[in-house]
Length: 227
Image 1 (cartoon, rainbow, N blue to C red):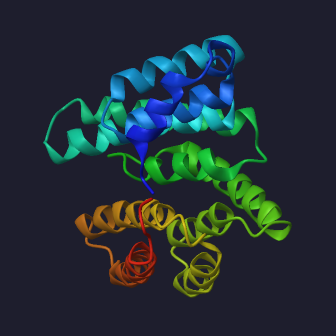
Image 2: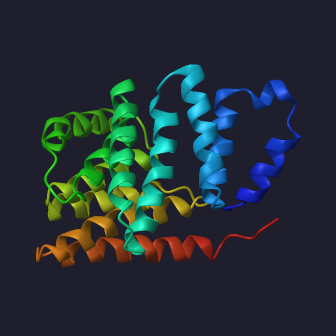
C-alpha cells in the first residue's frame, strides 16, 4: 500500500526491546528510505551492520539507499554519482557474499556493474553463481523475487527468448497486494535498457518487457482500496 509514513509511525510506538530487533530496524530503514529520508536510513542500517555483521537483507537495503542516491545524482548530472554507484555495488556484493543462497543482492550487484563507465571484471565471475542461486531457489518456491531475478539475469545475458519466458512467471507470481514489486523490476530493466541505448545497442525488446510489467502494475493498483 506504500504506507511508509505509517510504518515509521508504527515503529515509533513499539516498545524499545522490539525496536532493537534486527528485522524491525531493517524495515524501519526501508520505510525511511522510501520516504526520502536517505541519511536516516543509512544510519540505521550501518548500526545494524555494526551490531550484527553483514547479511543479504541488511546489505541489500543499504545498497538500495546508495542506488537511489546514484540514480538521483545521475539524473542531476552530479559527479558524486560515480561514488554512489561504487558504494551500491560494493554493498550489494558484500550482501551476496554473506549468503550466496540469496540472489537478490547478487542480481543488483551485477546489474549495477553494467552501469559503470568501464566493464567490471567481477560481473563475469559472479554472474553464473547468481544465476545458479536464483534457479535453485525458484525451483522450490513461487516467490516473486526469485522469478524477477531470473528475468533480470536473462536481460543481462541478452537472451530475449528466455526473458519472455521468465516474464510470464513474474506476472503470474506477483502478489495482488504488492504492485510495487513490479515497479521495482520495471525500474531495473529500464536502467539496463537506457544504458544499452546510449551505447547504440538494440534494446527495444527490453521496452516490451517494461511495458508488460507496467500494465500489470497499473491493473493491480486499480484494485487497491486504502483502509
